[in-house]
Amino acid sequence: MVEKSGLHTRNLHKNPYDFEELISCVPELKHYVFKNTYGSLTINFSIPKAVKLLNKALLEHFYNVKNWDIPDENLCPPIPGRADYIHNIADLLAENLREIPVGLSVKGLDIGTGANLVYPLIAHQSYGWQMLGTDINQKSLDNAHKILVGNSDLLKDIQLKFQPDSNFIFKNILNSEDRFTFSMCNPPFHDSEESAMKGNLRKTKNLKKSKTQKPNLNFSGQQSELWCEGGELAFISKMIEESASYSSQILWFTCLVSKKENLFKLNSLLKKFKAFEVKTIDMAQGQKVSRILAWSFVPPQERRIWFK
Image (cartoon, helix red, strand yellow):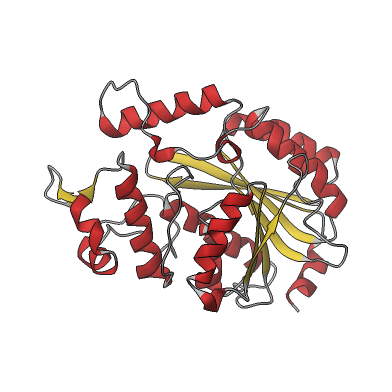
């Protein structure tokens, strides 16, 4: 069994997929599984239905999440990469404790949780953390709630909250008494719908190795999931600026950064707002490289009390 390159050492998806086990969880998946030229079982990742069923099976088999589903128009995330973000946050929190904190003493905030709710599901099932998922799209939250209802044991530990104003990230979400151990976010990458569609087309071409001119919406999603004015740089900059106003309520602010060239401006902005500590955590899955930008306004000597 050859491990997938770059994934975190605790990632449950390091090894190739055991499709027989996954099909036992979701029998419908068998219609999309075939042998590739190397004799290995796989699916065609350019087929939206196949990817959704694979996710459904992975979440049930590895995380005991039943009845997972999302509308066809919503983003269908790659589970291994999402799990890596969670495990890297666990390592970040462990730095001040010398061990990974588990259980309800850790409370996480997932900004833009989407219809899929994947980050809170993996975080809670992996480490027992409490999670709050937020979104500006009520329909997405309705579907996330439907997933929780199908896993009623999770309802008390994973909560959802609607953000009524897309101009804000933490305002309207945090009350004055709220304290979170961390926040996390996979921000909109593109700066326009046109850019998002072009990116979608490139991914589809790479997967199909064809010259199709019609984007296959396997990687689609609602507008709020894919693009915003100014793209990820503008979104994360807004997050940094707003985070300074909630510096004593969240121990670690974190966000995925897809474009490495954005790091310089983001780090400069964090310096301007006097973040006490800033970290860049590299992540890789195969040839895809991304990174987590993490910052805290809390001095190290004060961090341990967050877990009591």
